[in-house]
Image (cartoon, rainbow, N blue to C red; front, side):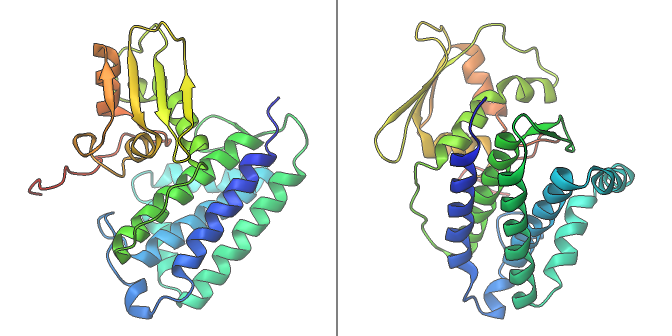
Amino acid sequence: MADPTPVIDDLRAESEELDLLVAELSPEQWALATPAPGWTVAHQIAHLAWTDHSSVLAVTDHDAFSREVEKALAAPGDFVDEGAEEGARKPPERLLADWRAGRTALEQALRAAPDGARFPWYGPPMSTASMATARLMETWAHGMDVADALGVERTPTDRLRHIARLGVRTRDFAFGVHGMPVPFEEFRVELTAPSGEVWAYGPEDAADRVTGPALDFCLLVTQRAHRSDLALRAAGPDADRWLDIAQAFAGPPGKGRQAKGETP
């Protein structure tokens, strides 16, 4: 059983880094548009706060979380945007305080969870480590949206290893959610970490392979960049197809980002 402590520690560090990015923003900067259509910087942080709150309920109050799932099922196309919109209407200082309190509560709940615990979610149930990984993935991805809006270049870290591993593990989900046959054989994935280390997944002799920077792979599986703008290489038809549909997040396939220079 994997020790969830490292990923919980990295989730905290990722959140703190994003906090530094937004803590001193002016009201005008909170209202800047991000790459997500209709979402400002405030919407991005509000979404994180909303999802952290849902995660706390999933870990600590299953009945309350079940009621949240019922709300989601009643408005499957709107509940995410509505949650972000509600939070984005708050004054920035209140939104920041709510986000900080929610992520602290989630960290405490995850650290206190018993070994082997499984928590309900909008998709399949999640372990403590999986819940923390999903929250780190979202925090990083939405943090990239915030950085894009602010014109800030973020320095990648080896915390990306959690997102990369999640991206590899969700390969079959990506094929299934697109209604495509799931490849029978495993792929070999070799990614160069920001530190220069190589992260490798799958059998060395696999026919289908993906190679490239870990940052680019994480941008791809979170749909924060178009494949044509990334230095990822696929060998084999199934691996090539995967890079067109990869996603590490639950829910229906997103539209992804347009290639740079492409007309909307």
